[in-house]
Amino acid sequence: MPTNILTVHKLLRLSNDDLGVVRVANNLIDSKRESKSCFYRRDNLKIVNKKNGRWVIRSVMGNPGTIKHLDAKSIALDYDAADQLRVRYGDVELIVTRAKWYEVYYVLWNDKDVSNRVSIRLSLVGCLLGVIGILTAFL
Picture 1 (cartoon, rainbow, N blue to C red):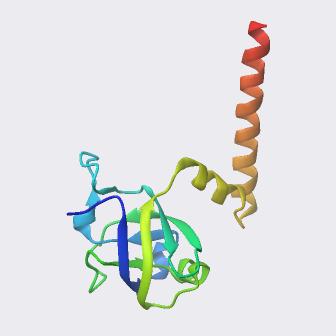
Picture 2 (picture 1 turned 90 degrees about the horizontal axis):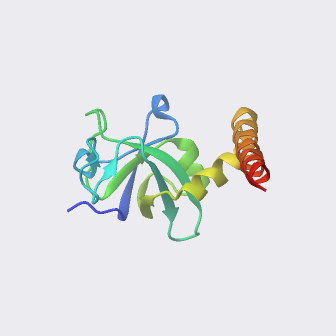
């Protein structure tokens, strides 16, 4: 039975077309968002390397049928994610969970892409200024 916490023992290589995505077995995906025990398509997942504590966040998708040997105890990641986790393709010890909202903001705040960094910082500053404006209007 799929759960919100997945222990992964095998890491497969993902094609360069799927950057920023983690592919899992289709029985772990609930596209209709009805089951709390499955991952939702395009949801953000936190992938943690148990050996060194490094982690990455990727959007989850099912297997379109192009990745062989993808089962309930394996995932497919792009090269950049494997490099950030400091793992090689093959046998691994990874934990996959849903990412918390603040972990997603942390990743975006420290993103290498300047446009992502600036946009998240401007949106948070705008939200903070909006809250300050609402509070000053009532005082």
